[in-house]
Picture 1 (tube, chains in turn blue, purple, cyan, yellow):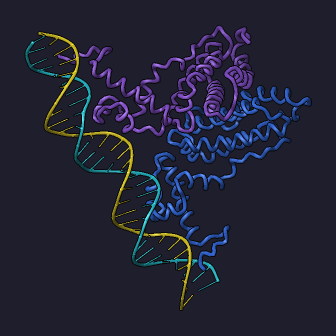
Picture 2 (spheres, helix red, strand yellow; picture 1 turned 180 degrees about the horizontal axis):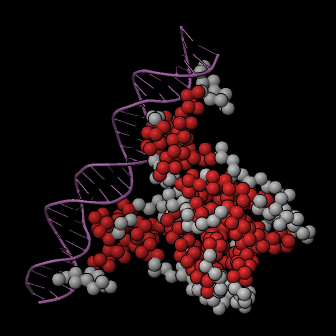
Picture 3 (cartoon, each protein chain N blue to C red; picture 1 turned 135 degrees about the vertical axis):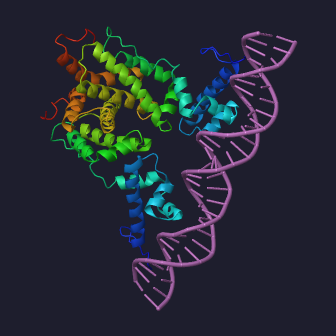
Amino acid sequence: MPGNAAPGNPDRRVRRTRAAIRHALMELILEKGYEPVTVTDLINRADVGRSTFYAHFTDKQAVLFGSLEELDFLRPSPDAGGPLFAFSLAMFEHVQEQRRLVRALLGRRGGREVVAHGERLLTAAVRDELLARGAAPSPHLDLVVTCAVGAFMALTRAWADDEITATPAELDTAFRATVIPGVRTLLERDSGRRPSPAE
Amino acid sequence: MPGNAAPGNPDRRVRRTRAAIRHALMELILEKGYEPVTVTDLINRADVGRSTFYAHFTDKQAVLFGSLEELDFLRPSPDAGGPLFAFSLAMFEHVQEQRRLVRALLGRRGGREVVAHGERLLTAAVRDELLARGAAPSPHLDLVVTCAVGAFMALTRAWADDEITATPAELDTAFRATVIPGVRTLLERDSGRRPSPAE
DNA sequence: TCCATAAGTGAACAGGTTGTTCGAGAGGAG
DNA sequence: CTCCTCTCGAACAACCTGTTCACTTATGGA
Protein backbone atom coordinates (compact mmCIF):
# COMPACT_ATOMS: atom_id res chain seq x y z
CA MET A 1 0.00 0.00 0.00
CA PRO A 2 1.37 3.33 -1.00
CA GLY A 3 -0.81 5.52 1.12
CA ASN A 4 -0.23 3.55 4.28
CA ALA A 5 -0.29 7.06 5.54
CA ALA A 6 1.08 7.25 8.99
CA PRO A 7 -1.15 10.03 10.28
CA GLY A 8 1.75 12.35 10.87
CA ASN A 9 3.52 11.66 7.58
CA PRO A 10 1.21 11.37 4.61
CA ASP A 11 2.01 10.51 1.03
CA ARG A 12 4.59 12.77 -0.47
CA ARG A 13 2.09 13.90 -3.09
CA VAL A 14 -0.27 14.99 -0.39
CA ARG A 15 2.41 17.02 1.30
CA ARG A 16 3.41 18.59 -1.97
CA THR A 17 -0.16 19.51 -2.84
CA ARG A 18 -1.01 20.99 0.53
CA ALA A 19 2.21 22.92 0.69
CA ALA A 20 1.64 24.30 -2.78
CA ILE A 21 -1.84 25.48 -1.86
CA ARG A 22 -0.75 27.04 1.40
CA HIS A 23 2.13 28.74 -0.30
CA ALA A 24 -0.14 30.04 -3.04
CA LEU A 25 -2.51 31.44 -0.44
CA MET A 26 0.24 33.36 1.28
CA GLU A 27 1.45 34.80 -2.00
CA LEU A 28 -2.02 35.82 -3.06
CA ILE A 29 -2.88 37.30 0.31
CA LEU A 30 0.17 39.50 0.11
CA GLU A 31 -0.76 40.57 -3.38
CA LYS A 32 -4.48 41.19 -3.08
CA GLY A 33 -5.47 40.89 0.55
CA TYR A 34 -7.39 37.96 1.97
CA GLU A 35 -10.94 38.61 0.96
CA PRO A 36 -10.45 39.00 -2.78
CA VAL A 37 -8.61 35.68 -3.07
CA THR A 38 -10.79 33.02 -4.68
CA VAL A 39 -10.47 29.28 -4.80
CA THR A 40 -9.93 29.60 -8.52
CA ASP A 41 -7.00 31.92 -7.86
CA LEU A 42 -5.57 29.40 -5.47
CA ILE A 43 -5.68 26.43 -7.77
CA ASN A 44 -4.26 28.42 -10.63
CA ARG A 45 -1.39 29.73 -8.58
CA ALA A 46 -0.74 26.40 -6.93
CA ASP A 47 -1.16 24.65 -10.25
CA VAL A 48 -3.48 22.06 -8.80
CA GLY A 49 -6.72 20.56 -10.04
CA ARG A 50 -9.92 21.96 -8.65
CA SER A 51 -11.05 18.56 -7.47
CA THR A 52 -7.72 18.12 -5.77
CA PHE A 53 -8.24 21.30 -3.81
CA TYR A 54 -11.59 20.20 -2.50
CA ALA A 55 -10.11 16.83 -1.61
CA HIS A 56 -7.94 18.60 0.95
CA PHE A 57 -9.76 21.72 2.06
CA THR A 58 -13.35 22.82 2.26
CA ASP A 59 -12.61 26.51 1.99
CA LYS A 60 -9.96 29.08 1.53
CA GLN A 61 -10.63 29.69 5.20
CA ALA A 62 -9.62 26.14 6.02
CA VAL A 63 -6.33 26.70 4.23
CA LEU A 64 -5.65 29.83 6.18
CA PHE A 65 -6.56 28.44 9.57
CA GLY A 66 -4.39 25.43 8.87
CA SER A 67 -1.45 27.67 8.07
CA LEU A 68 -2.14 29.91 11.00
CA GLU A 69 -1.47 27.14 13.46
CA GLU A 70 2.13 27.18 12.36
CA LEU A 71 2.55 30.86 13.10
CA ASP A 72 3.24 30.77 16.77
CA PHE A 73 3.67 34.37 17.72
CA LEU A 74 -0.07 34.29 18.19
CA ARG A 75 0.29 32.42 21.44
CA PRO A 76 1.18 34.63 24.34
CA SER A 77 2.40 32.44 27.14
CA PRO A 78 0.42 33.03 30.34
CA ASP A 79 3.48 34.15 32.22
CA ALA A 80 2.21 35.14 35.63
CA GLY A 81 5.66 36.21 36.74
CA GLY A 82 6.40 39.11 34.41
CA PRO A 83 4.56 42.39 34.02
CA LEU A 84 0.88 42.42 33.23
CA PHE A 85 0.11 41.88 29.53
CA ALA A 86 3.73 41.25 28.77
CA PHE A 87 2.67 39.78 25.45
CA SER A 88 1.79 43.20 24.13
CA LEU A 89 5.19 44.55 23.14
CA ALA A 90 6.38 41.25 21.71
CA MET A 91 3.24 41.01 19.64
CA PHE A 92 3.49 44.49 18.25
CA GLU A 93 7.07 43.75 17.26
CA HIS A 94 6.10 40.56 15.53
CA VAL A 95 3.33 42.40 13.78
CA GLN A 96 5.82 44.95 12.56
CA GLU A 97 7.93 42.22 11.00
CA GLN A 98 4.93 40.65 9.34
CA ARG A 99 3.29 43.97 8.65
CA ARG A 100 2.22 43.31 5.09
CA LEU A 101 0.71 40.01 6.07
CA VAL A 102 -1.11 41.36 9.09
CA ARG A 103 -2.46 44.21 7.07
CA ALA A 104 -3.69 41.86 4.38
CA LEU A 105 -5.41 39.71 6.99
CA LEU A 106 -6.83 42.29 9.37
CA GLY A 107 -7.07 45.44 7.27
CA ARG A 108 -9.59 46.70 4.77
CA ARG A 109 -9.12 43.75 2.47
CA GLY A 110 -8.91 41.33 5.34
CA GLY A 111 -11.46 38.81 6.39
CA ARG A 112 -14.10 38.96 9.05
CA GLU A 113 -13.52 35.36 10.16
CA VAL A 114 -9.81 35.96 10.44
CA VAL A 115 -10.29 38.80 12.87
CA ALA A 116 -12.77 36.74 14.83
CA HIS A 117 -10.31 33.88 15.00
CA GLY A 118 -7.55 36.11 16.25
CA GLU A 119 -9.87 37.60 18.83
CA ARG A 120 -10.78 34.17 20.10
CA LEU A 121 -7.16 33.11 20.54
CA LEU A 122 -6.23 36.32 22.28
CA THR A 123 -9.31 36.29 24.47
CA ALA A 124 -8.48 32.85 25.80
CA ALA A 125 -4.90 33.87 26.47
CA VAL A 126 -5.78 37.09 28.27
CA ARG A 127 -8.43 35.39 30.33
CA ASP A 128 -5.93 32.76 31.42
CA GLU A 129 -3.42 35.40 32.36
CA LEU A 130 -5.88 37.26 34.54
CA LEU A 131 -7.03 34.05 36.18
CA ALA A 132 -3.42 33.11 36.87
CA ARG A 133 -3.06 36.44 38.63
CA GLY A 134 -5.92 35.82 40.95
CA ALA A 135 -8.96 37.16 39.16
CA ALA A 136 -12.14 35.29 39.97
CA PRO A 137 -14.01 33.73 37.06
CA SER A 138 -17.09 35.91 36.65
CA PRO A 139 -19.17 37.63 34.02
CA HIS A 140 -17.43 40.84 34.94
CA LEU A 141 -14.04 39.32 34.23
CA ASP A 142 -15.25 38.44 30.75
CA LEU A 143 -16.31 42.02 30.18
CA VAL A 144 -12.90 43.30 31.14
CA VAL A 145 -11.16 40.73 28.98
CA THR A 146 -13.34 41.69 26.04
CA CYS A 147 -12.41 45.33 26.50
CA ALA A 148 -8.71 44.60 26.64
CA VAL A 149 -8.75 42.35 23.60
CA GLY A 150 -10.91 44.78 21.68
CA ALA A 151 -8.50 47.59 22.41
CA PHE A 152 -5.51 45.52 21.40
CA MET A 153 -7.04 44.32 18.15
CA ALA A 154 -8.21 47.80 17.27
CA LEU A 155 -4.72 49.18 17.77
CA THR A 156 -3.18 46.42 15.73
CA ARG A 157 -5.62 46.82 12.88
CA ALA A 158 -5.46 50.59 12.75
CA TRP A 159 -1.69 50.49 12.87
CA ALA A 160 -1.29 47.85 10.19
CA ASP A 161 -3.71 49.87 8.10
CA ASP A 162 -1.61 53.02 8.53
CA GLU A 163 -4.41 54.89 10.24
CA ILE A 164 -2.11 55.65 13.12
CA THR A 165 1.64 56.13 13.20
CA ALA A 166 3.71 54.77 16.04
CA THR A 167 6.53 52.48 17.02
CA PRO A 168 5.79 49.13 18.66
CA ALA A 169 7.04 50.58 21.92
CA GLU A 170 4.62 53.48 21.71
CA LEU A 171 1.75 51.16 20.90
CA ASP A 172 2.65 49.00 23.83
CA THR A 173 2.82 52.00 26.12
CA ALA A 174 -0.50 53.40 24.98
CA PHE A 175 -2.24 50.05 25.21
CA ARG A 176 -1.06 49.34 28.68
CA ALA A 177 -1.54 52.85 29.95
CA THR A 178 -5.10 52.86 28.74
CA VAL A 179 -6.20 49.45 29.82
CA ILE A 180 -4.09 48.39 32.78
CA PRO A 181 -5.40 50.74 35.46
CA GLY A 182 -8.88 49.36 35.02
CA VAL A 183 -7.66 45.80 34.92
CA ARG A 184 -5.61 46.28 38.06
CA THR A 185 -8.67 47.51 39.90
CA LEU A 186 -10.42 44.29 38.99
CA LEU A 187 -7.51 42.19 40.18
CA GLU A 188 -7.24 44.01 43.48
CA ARG A 189 -10.93 43.65 44.09
CA ASP A 190 -10.87 39.92 43.41
CA SER A 191 -7.81 38.84 45.32
CA GLY A 192 -7.12 40.14 48.80
CA ARG A 193 -3.40 40.19 48.16
CA ARG A 194 -1.80 42.77 45.92
CA PRO A 195 -1.28 41.65 42.37
CA SER A 196 2.15 40.58 41.16
CA PRO A 197 5.06 42.93 41.65
CA ALA A 198 5.45 44.02 38.05
CA GLU A 199 5.03 47.46 36.60
CA MET B 1 -41.89 67.99 -17.39
CA PRO B 2 -42.78 65.38 -14.83
CA GLY B 3 -39.44 64.92 -13.15
CA ASN B 4 -38.83 68.59 -12.56
CA ALA B 5 -37.38 67.03 -9.47
CA ALA B 6 -36.70 69.55 -6.80
CA PRO B 7 -33.56 67.97 -5.36
CA GLY B 8 -35.15 67.43 -1.99
CA ASN B 9 -38.40 66.00 -3.29
CA PRO B 10 -38.00 63.57 -6.14
CA ASP B 11 -40.66 61.91 -8.21
CA ARG B 12 -43.11 59.90 -6.19
CA ARG B 13 -42.07 56.74 -8.01
CA VAL B 14 -38.50 57.29 -6.97
CA ARG B 15 -39.46 57.66 -3.34
CA ARG B 16 -41.60 54.56 -3.48
CA THR B 17 -38.86 52.49 -5.11
CA ARG B 18 -36.14 53.56 -2.73
CA ALA B 19 -38.33 53.06 0.28
CA ALA B 20 -39.29 49.58 -0.90
CA ILE B 21 -35.67 48.60 -1.34
CA ARG B 22 -34.60 50.00 2.02
CA HIS B 23 -37.50 48.29 3.70
CA ALA B 24 -36.66 45.02 2.01
CA LEU B 25 -33.08 45.28 3.17
CA MET B 26 -34.10 45.73 6.79
CA GLU B 27 -36.43 42.76 6.62
CA LEU B 28 -33.82 40.55 5.02
CA ILE B 29 -31.08 41.63 7.41
CA LEU B 30 -33.25 40.65 10.33
CA GLU B 31 -33.99 37.30 8.73
CA LYS B 32 -30.57 36.24 7.48
CA GLY B 33 -28.02 38.73 8.72
CA TYR B 34 -26.33 41.30 6.53
CA GLU B 35 -23.71 39.35 4.67
CA PRO B 36 -25.91 36.65 3.16
CA VAL B 37 -28.33 39.15 1.64
CA THR B 38 -27.87 39.42 -2.13
CA VAL B 39 -29.04 42.02 -4.58
CA THR B 40 -31.26 39.37 -6.09
CA ASP B 41 -32.89 38.86 -2.70
CA LEU B 42 -33.46 42.57 -2.44
CA ILE B 43 -35.17 43.03 -5.78
CA ASN B 44 -37.36 40.01 -5.22
CA ARG B 45 -38.46 41.16 -1.80
CA ALA B 46 -38.92 44.76 -2.88
CA ASP B 47 -40.61 43.59 -6.07
CA VAL B 48 -38.49 45.83 -8.22
CA GLY B 49 -36.71 45.27 -11.50
CA ARG B 50 -33.02 44.55 -11.39
CA SER B 51 -32.25 47.45 -13.68
CA THR B 52 -34.28 49.69 -11.39
CA PHE B 53 -32.16 48.70 -8.44
CA TYR B 54 -28.94 49.61 -10.16
CA ALA B 55 -30.48 52.88 -11.26
CA HIS B 56 -30.68 53.91 -7.61
CA PHE B 57 -27.91 52.11 -5.77
CA THR B 58 -24.54 50.68 -6.67
CA ASP B 59 -24.49 48.10 -3.91
CA LYS B 60 -26.36 46.60 -1.08
CA GLN B 61 -23.84 48.51 0.96
CA ALA B 62 -25.05 51.77 -0.54
CA VAL B 63 -28.58 50.91 0.52
CA LEU B 64 -27.50 50.20 4.06
CA PHE B 65 -25.35 53.28 4.46
CA GLY B 66 -28.17 55.40 3.12
CA SER B 67 -30.55 53.96 5.69
CA LEU B 68 -28.01 54.22 8.46
CA GLU B 69 -27.95 57.99 8.21
CA GLU B 70 -31.48 58.04 9.46
CA LEU B 71 -30.66 56.07 12.57
CA ASP B 72 -29.40 58.78 14.84
CA PHE B 73 -28.52 57.00 18.03
CA LEU B 74 -25.17 56.54 16.38
CA ARG B 75 -24.24 60.13 17.04
CA PRO B 76 -23.07 60.72 20.57
CA SER B 77 -23.16 64.43 21.18
CA PRO B 78 -19.80 65.74 22.37
CA ASP B 79 -21.18 66.91 25.67
CA ALA B 80 -18.22 68.25 27.54
CA GLY B 81 -20.31 69.02 30.57
CA GLY B 82 -21.47 65.59 31.67
CA PRO B 83 -19.44 62.62 32.81
CA LEU B 84 -16.71 61.26 30.59
CA PHE B 85 -18.01 58.94 27.84
CA ALA B 86 -21.58 59.66 28.77
CA PHE B 87 -22.67 58.18 25.46
CA SER B 88 -21.82 54.70 26.62
CA LEU B 89 -24.88 53.85 28.69
CA ALA B 90 -27.30 55.44 26.26
CA MET B 91 -25.77 53.52 23.42
CA PHE B 92 -25.89 50.19 25.17
CA GLU B 93 -29.54 50.83 25.90
CA HIS B 94 -30.30 51.67 22.30
CA VAL B 95 -28.42 48.59 21.24
CA GLN B 96 -30.56 46.53 23.56
CA GLU B 97 -33.72 47.83 21.90
CA GLN B 98 -32.36 47.15 18.45
CA ARG B 99 -30.59 44.01 19.51
CA ARG B 100 -31.64 41.83 16.61
CA LEU B 101 -30.59 44.47 14.14
CA VAL B 102 -27.26 45.17 15.79
CA ARG B 103 -26.51 41.50 15.96
CA ALA B 104 -27.37 41.06 12.31
CA LEU B 105 -25.08 43.94 11.39
CA LEU B 106 -22.14 43.44 13.72
CA GLY B 107 -22.29 39.76 14.62
CA ARG B 108 -21.13 36.63 12.85
CA ARG B 109 -23.32 37.24 9.85
CA GLY B 110 -22.61 40.92 9.87
CA GLY B 111 -20.49 42.82 7.43
CA ARG B 112 -16.92 43.98 7.66
CA GLU B 113 -17.66 47.36 6.08
CA VAL B 114 -20.50 47.94 8.51
CA VAL B 115 -18.26 47.49 11.51
CA ALA B 116 -15.65 49.73 9.93
CA HIS B 117 -18.27 52.39 9.30
CA GLY B 118 -19.47 52.28 12.88
CA GLU B 119 -15.91 52.48 14.13
CA ARG B 120 -15.26 55.54 12.04
CA LEU B 121 -18.30 57.38 13.37
CA LEU B 122 -17.51 56.51 16.95
CA THR B 123 -13.84 57.34 16.59
CA ALA B 124 -14.64 60.83 15.37
CA ALA B 125 -17.08 61.36 18.22
CA VAL B 126 -14.75 60.13 20.94
CA ARG B 127 -11.87 62.14 19.56
CA ASP B 128 -14.01 65.26 19.62
CA GLU B 129 -15.07 64.61 23.17
CA LEU B 130 -11.52 64.26 24.39
CA LEU B 131 -10.44 67.36 22.53
CA ALA B 132 -13.34 69.29 24.04
CA ARG B 133 -12.05 68.25 27.43
CA GLY B 134 -8.63 69.63 26.86
CA ALA B 135 -6.67 66.79 25.29
CA ALA B 136 -4.01 67.97 22.88
CA PRO B 137 -4.19 66.66 19.33
CA SER B 138 -1.34 64.20 19.07
CA PRO B 139 -0.52 60.74 17.80
CA HIS B 140 -0.84 59.52 21.34
CA LEU B 141 -4.36 60.84 21.59
CA ASP B 142 -5.27 58.81 18.53
CA LEU B 143 -3.88 55.70 20.12
CA VAL B 144 -5.98 56.20 23.21
CA VAL B 145 -9.08 56.90 21.14
CA THR B 146 -8.49 53.76 19.14
CA CYS B 147 -8.24 51.74 22.33
CA ALA B 148 -11.45 53.15 23.74
CA VAL B 149 -13.42 52.63 20.54
CA GLY B 150 -12.01 49.15 20.09
CA ALA B 151 -13.07 48.22 23.60
CA PHE B 152 -16.54 49.63 23.11
CA MET B 153 -17.11 47.93 19.80
CA ALA B 154 -15.82 44.64 21.12
CA LEU B 155 -18.19 44.78 24.04
CA THR B 156 -21.11 45.66 21.81
CA ARG B 157 -20.38 42.91 19.35
CA ALA B 158 -19.76 40.23 21.92
CA TRP B 159 -22.89 41.22 23.78
CA ALA B 160 -25.14 41.34 20.74
CA ASP B 161 -23.70 37.96 19.78
CA ASP B 162 -24.55 36.51 23.19
CA GLU B 163 -20.96 35.74 24.00
CA ILE B 164 -21.29 37.68 27.22
CA THR B 165 -24.27 38.22 29.47
CA ALA B 166 -24.91 41.56 31.10
CA THR B 167 -27.30 44.45 31.45
CA PRO B 168 -26.59 47.73 29.70
CA ALA B 169 -25.70 49.21 33.06
CA GLU B 170 -23.15 46.49 33.72
CA LEU B 171 -21.65 46.94 30.28
CA ASP B 172 -21.42 50.65 30.84
CA THR B 173 -19.76 50.15 34.20
CA ALA B 174 -17.25 47.65 32.88
CA PHE B 175 -16.40 49.77 29.88
CA ARG B 176 -15.82 52.90 31.84
CA ALA B 177 -14.04 51.20 34.69
CA THR B 178 -11.63 49.58 32.28
CA VAL B 179 -10.93 52.47 30.00
CA ILE B 180 -11.45 55.68 31.92
CA PRO B 181 -8.51 55.57 34.31
CA GLY B 182 -6.11 55.47 31.41
CA VAL B 183 -7.97 58.17 29.54
CA ARG B 184 -8.02 60.41 32.56
CA THR B 185 -4.28 60.13 32.88
CA LEU B 186 -3.96 61.39 29.34
CA LEU B 187 -6.27 64.31 30.00
CA GLU B 188 -4.46 65.35 33.14
CA ARG B 189 -1.14 65.20 31.39
CA ASP B 190 -2.35 67.36 28.51
CA SER B 191 -4.19 70.09 30.36
CA GLY B 192 -2.73 71.69 33.44
CA ARG B 193 -6.16 71.98 35.03
CA ARG B 194 -8.06 69.00 36.34
CA PRO B 195 -10.51 67.50 33.89
CA SER B 196 -14.20 68.20 34.20
CA PRO B 197 -15.90 67.57 37.53
CA ALA B 198 -17.77 64.41 36.56
CA GLU B 199 -17.42 60.93 37.98
C1' DT C 1 -57.22 67.35 -19.72
C1' DC C 2 -53.11 66.32 -22.39
C1' DC C 3 -48.76 64.31 -23.33
C1' DA C 4 -43.57 64.74 -23.27
C1' DT C 5 -40.51 62.84 -20.33
C1' DA C 6 -38.57 60.45 -16.53
C1' DA C 7 -39.01 56.12 -14.27
C1' DG C 8 -39.83 51.28 -14.07
C1' DT C 9 -40.18 46.58 -16.43
C1' DG C 10 -38.45 42.09 -17.61
C1' DA C 11 -35.69 39.47 -19.98
C1' DA C 12 -31.52 38.44 -21.69
C1' DC C 13 -26.60 38.68 -21.49
C1' DA C 14 -21.47 37.95 -20.44
C1' DG C 15 -18.56 37.07 -16.87
C1' DG C 16 -17.43 35.32 -12.52
C1' DT C 17 -17.80 32.22 -8.52
C1' DT C 18 -18.56 27.77 -5.97
C1' DG C 19 -18.66 22.83 -5.13
C1' DT C 20 -19.29 18.21 -7.34
C1' DT C 21 -18.55 14.40 -10.43
C1' DC C 22 -16.00 11.03 -13.12
C1' DG C 23 -12.90 8.46 -16.08
C1' DA C 24 -8.22 8.27 -17.12
C1' DG C 25 -3.58 8.59 -15.88
C1' DA C 26 0.61 9.18 -12.89
C1' DG C 27 2.99 8.62 -8.70
C1' DG C 28 4.45 6.35 -4.30
C1' DA C 29 4.88 2.56 -0.92
C1' DG C 30 5.92 -1.95 -0.10
C1' DC D 1 7.01 -4.82 -10.01
C1' DT D 2 2.42 -4.15 -8.62
C1' DC D 3 -1.37 -2.21 -6.74
C1' DC D 4 -3.55 1.44 -4.54
C1' DT D 5 -3.91 6.20 -3.88
C1' DC D 6 -3.65 10.60 -5.36
C1' DT D 7 -4.05 13.89 -9.03
C1' DC D 8 -5.68 15.64 -13.35
C1' DG D 9 -8.85 18.23 -16.17
C1' DA D 10 -12.79 18.96 -18.01
C1' DA D 11 -17.36 19.40 -17.60
C1' DC D 12 -21.38 20.51 -14.86
C1' DA D 13 -25.39 22.92 -12.35
C1' DA D 14 -26.23 26.58 -9.58
C1' DC D 15 -25.77 30.98 -8.08
C1' DC D 16 -24.34 35.77 -8.17
C1' DT D 17 -23.29 40.40 -10.25
C1' DG D 18 -23.81 44.42 -13.40
C1' DT D 19 -25.25 46.02 -17.85
C1' DT D 20 -28.11 46.56 -21.83
C1' DC D 21 -32.33 47.36 -24.49
C1' DA D 22 -36.85 47.82 -26.33
C1' DC D 23 -41.21 48.44 -24.21
C1' DT D 24 -44.68 50.18 -20.87
C1' DT D 25 -46.19 52.98 -17.29
C1' DA D 26 -46.94 57.00 -14.24
C1' DT D 27 -46.03 61.77 -13.12
C1' DG D 28 -46.70 66.52 -13.01
C1' DG D 29 -46.48 70.95 -15.65
C1' DA D 30 -48.90 73.48 -19.30
